Length: 122
Image (tube, rainbow, N blue to C red; front, side):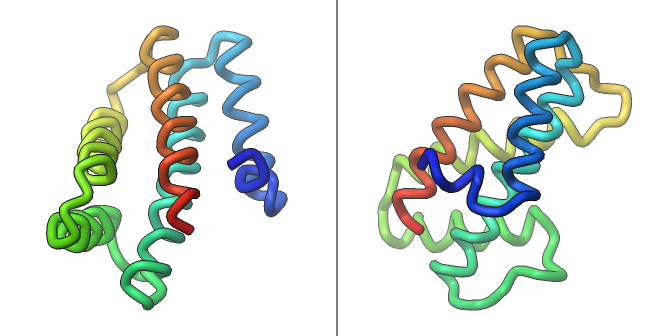
């Protein structure tokens, strides 16, 4: 898990920027960067599970296909994780939504859990 965020410069940069924004009081920016990392991991998981590149697909399509796959395999942990990610994504999708520091910290913890859980499957 520790290697995934630094496995390419884009991931490493987003992770560092997210942490910087979290520490220095830009919670909405931090939340958006952490969500982007989760979405990257989700797309990599999709590619492995489904066998095709999700390029050109909406986030909703990727999440729905993964939910269908993990419902069939009865993997409650991943289903729960996907549901939480969708909820966070929906919160962040509204342009007027600003995260509090506490929400950004919660999203950071969710991101770390998502990466830890999802990367095991990659």
